[in-house]
Length: 346
Image (tube, rainbow, N blue to C red; front, side, top):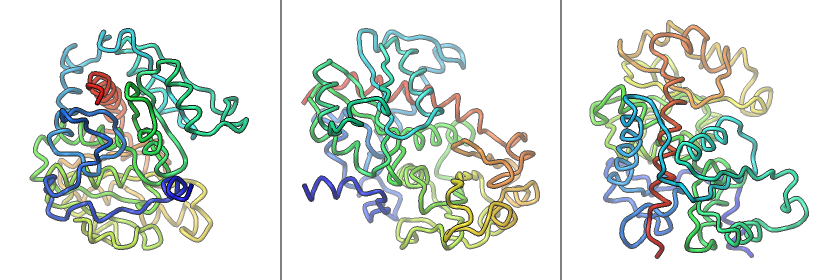
């Protein structure tokens, strides 16, 4: 159907719903995500998600970590619940952290083997979801190469089933955005005093889109997009960010630097010349990091391409919080799963 195919486009651009005044009150709330009680029913995108909802997720993650004095211990919150990981696109890091998070919550976890699944035999995406609903799955974590696939699933799934977007096309990666926000709040406390620079491939980055929505909603006064012109979404300035054509200028005085991964298929093509040239012009080196605030933190969604986006001495240095992002990511995904599973059916 035309409407359905439109939702499954490979690339979905940033949309004007991202307000330039940093206020979540002017953003339309996606009715799929919150139920009539204001509870998180699905997590599909951070666009339009109220500031209070984002903060509640971050606070819940903090409670899960604080319960063990800075660590994470097993919780019975999802005992008797089933979590299905549906990864139509490969990602060992994201799938393993979701699996760990579900097991820490005492859930039963099933990782669906997509290459051997019925979808390869002609079964549609929605047929697969209806089958899982009949199996009484409670939470489905979905990663899909097409933008909009988790939204389509959420529109048609049974009321008892909760959908979490683990990355769709170039559109959104909400749990990565949330763990990035948790990391920033942990180290910097107050979002309203920060300058945050996102550096790299913003055109194809679902992480960048989710981060921009979250940062502006949480009141960050200056969000910077630092990228080559070939890797810049059209009309980026409309979304409350400052655009820089130079990394040296873009990281000047920044409190937080988020380096974005460059996919190998972008090299030696129409977007970039080669990895060495990219690193020379856009890689984060100790010299460039010195331009940022003295206490700036360096982040990266991983996996890190050393010598492409970032020099090893920076990735492993005192200002890098990349490993903390991984640790916090488990708690954030625990928080999201526990909240959606606890929401009331409409």
